[in-house]
Image (cartoon, rainbow, N blue to C red; front, top):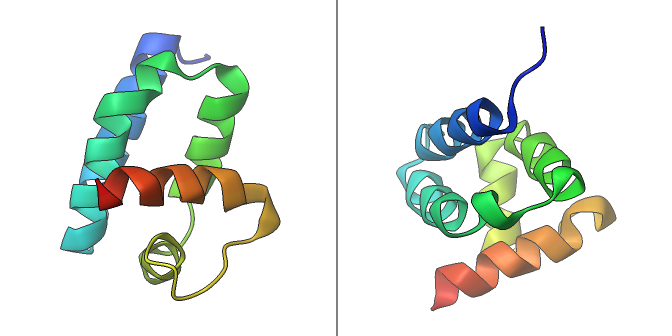
Length: 85
């Protein structure tokens, strides 16, 4: 059984809110609320893959402490820009 787009977005919004590190909960839940509905399938696939990454790594990528892997570079830059606003 496959997820509908609506169910998939809701699942990713929930995973964005319940990360384990409060800072990532705040950053990703805000980003998800603003952006997931407008993403195409490829964008959702990339965001879903990013959600599987370790919170400590994500936090270092978003805050610029460590460069993210190339596949996530544009997405992390977009998240970081949203976070800095």
